[in-house]
Structure formats: structure tokens, C-alpha cells
Image 1 (spheres, rainbow, N blue to C red):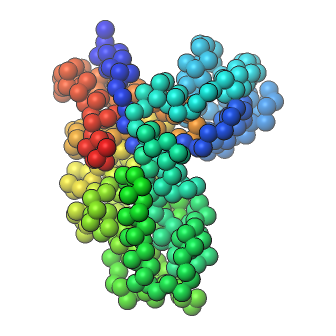
Image 2 (cartoon, rainbow, N blue to C red; image 1 turned 120 degrees about the vertical axis):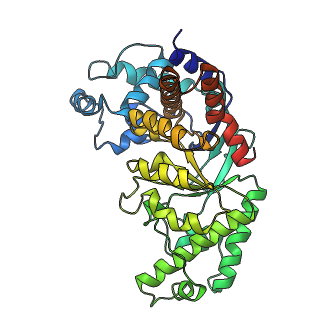
Image 3 (tube, helix red, strand yellow; image 1 turned 60 degrees about the horizontal axis):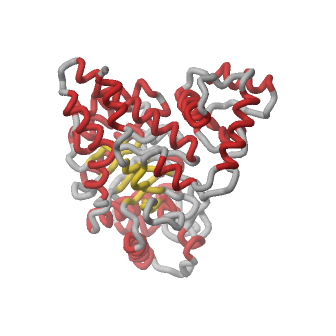
Length: 397
């Protein structure tokens, strides 16, 4: 048996700690067909529409059949529906019918994620309700999304998900800047007491992640000031991000950071260099390898002991890039600082993400075994570290 096959089979035996997921609240019969699946997966990012007609299906597949998002969704459906058929304009009515039957027969999303995806724990980023565990703390361990705190410079400004702490928590509008800072720390403490094991920034969907150290006086000018210029608001936001970094260090809670893509401009992980360097006790977890600027993520992980790599989303964006990135990580970085998460909304996409992650890790490690960088035994140990043990240590779960 090849090393690649042995590693894939070994990964199937691991009780996985999934470090990043957006699993939506359970809804009977969801997703109700291919269109709803596409709309609630990364296929929705592919600039194609699916209206149920044969013509639309042909166009959809013609443009995407070699796309990684499409490939792993298709693989997930093939395995779950027990077929070798490819999804195309001729077979889509069959897939549509079988997917509806599959969704209608689902008794529990959580059982599926445990039994089929082998997830022992899932760190959930429920951005619609920051800090939620979906009512199942045995499976879901929350990450607490902090974007909204950078948008409290006015009581009615909101982040990319429509959140603002004054609106979400009903904070008094006359709160002073000092009280605002104290309240952020109080909320983080409360969420940790409720089970949160990580903070999470998805700020590249809101603004640049180029955070510069600011003074208290500079930041205060941007707080609750209707006359504030954009530079004052930026100073406020930079200060708040640094403030959150200090809180993360104080309570030794990892700080997960979306890097790459987002709004593209301002999402490169290298823009975090100043804040990483000035907060050496904060543990920064870089998501997505800063794709497409993967070399910059590798450089930060190499140079700073407080930077970790999470492979979430990467195998779905570009499987070959994920394979190459993992090999580079092991060659230049730290094997004990690598984790994996599905980064998906539905159980079908989560299973596809698992298949993609399993493939990418097994492929990268088997190539390194063939090149005599490691033994098969070491490769198996690394799969256990990437899919479980590193996460347990980093997040104390």
C-alpha cells in the first residue's frame, strides 16, 4: 500500500478537533437541493448562478468542473449519495432528487459531524451570535468574534455582519471611552467563562489589517465623535485591536485571524507584522495561509514564536497550493503549530472540506516520505498532530 493511501486511511481513524467552522443552526430538510447548497457554500463565490434549468447547469459545470470548491462538493455528494457519477447537466436532476432525500432523512447534523466527519470537537465561529455553542457544548466550543468592537466608535455603525456592541448588548450610549475599554475586557471574560476558547477576527471583510500602535489620546478622538475624521476612526480601531491583543495575552487565549482574500486590499498577513512584533505574548493564529500571499504567512510563522498556522479553507480554495504550503510549513516552520478546520456552513460542505483536508495533508506528507524527509511512522504522527493534538494544546481543550 502506498504511503498516500496509508496516511489517508490513518486520518480516517483520528477523532478530529476542527478548529474553525461556521455550522449554521440546524434546519430540517436543509439544504433543499443544489441551488440552496451552492448558495450556502463557497460555490456561491464563483460568479455562477443555478436556477434549476439544464442550460444553467451546463454553464455552471462548464466554468467550475475543475474548480476546487466544486470538486470537493462533488466528492462529498458522490460519497454521501453512493455514486461515481459526475455532477453535470445530464445528471443534475438525479443529484437534485437524491440531495433532497438525503437532507430530508437527516436526523441530526451533530451526529453526522461526529460519525461521518469524525469531529470530536468543533471550534465554532457563529458570527450571527458571537460566542454561540448552538446549544451543544459537548461538540461545539465557541470562538468569540471581535469585529464589532472596532465599530463602537459610534453607537449605530456596524461591522460586516451587522454587529455593534451598543446594539448587540444594549450598552449605554453615554459610556466613556475608558468604560468602553473595560467593557470589552469584561465581555471577553464572560465569553471565556461560557466556554469560548479563542478570539476571532474576520476584519479583512471590514477594513485593512494594517494595525499601527496608537496612543490613548489619538484613539479617544475617534470615539463617539460626530466630527471625527477618518484618520481618527482608524486610530480608534487600531487602538482597539491592540487592546484586544493585550487582553488575549492577559488571559492566554489564542487570537484567530482571517488573512488573505476578504476584500483583497489590506488582507495580506504581512500587514500584521507590527502588531505581532509588539505583542509577543499574544498567540496569533493565521487562517488560510494568507492566500494568495502564502509566502508572507510562512515568513511570519518562521520569524515569530507566537504565530501559528491553520490550514482551514486552503484545500478548498486551491488544493495544490495547500499541499505545497504544508510542505513549506514543515520545512520552514513548526510542526507543532499547524491545525486544520473545515470553515464551512453545511454538513455536506464540511464533509467535502474534510475530504479535501485529508487529501492535502496525506499528499504533502507522502511526497515528503517519498523524498526521505520523514518516515511513514513520522507522517502518521504528524497527521494526528495536525488534525487533533496541536489544537488540543493550543486551545487547551
